[in-house]
Image 1 (cartoon, rainbow over the protein chains, first blue to last red):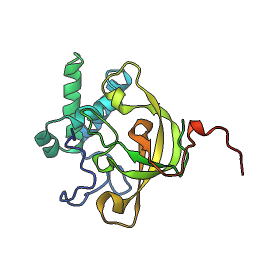
Image 2 (cartoon, rainbow over the protein chains, first blue to last red):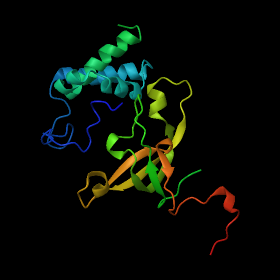
Image 3 (tube, each protein chain N blue to C red):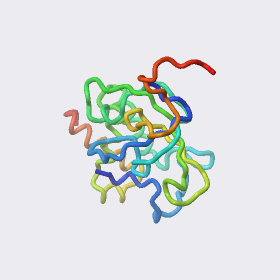
Length: 89
Length: 105
């Protein structure tokens, strides 16, 4: 079934405030965001999960959690799920 | 079989219960192949941990925005895996295998 992330073409979310990493925007808004990004990269390169698994896990967050979380908060919640699922937490 | 640029294709209308890279707004839509890229593992398989995920050509497909949303004069490009697509009926494109050899004109 369609998941909460799949909102392309829907209106009502307001303007996109900024594009992270673009010319006028820093890639991260806080140090913890960079750490989450790095953690995902390290765990992925160690073979714990694929990029598609990470996407799948983010998309599978409960809608109320997904919609109330920032971009990297979603990454962090997905990482917490994945390390527990893979038995390394 | 590789679909050639210019081939009209229809996207799958399926609503899978797993990860997919075919967004909802492109389900069951007709577009045109712009570019046939390299083969890449199918995310639907990779996300589910399939041991030997299918590798499929990823196509760049162009859609008319007005056809997707009823408005807009622009087009939308999407990179879509081969199994998301089927050739649209009655349109130009890949020759049927039953047609036999064809000569250049």
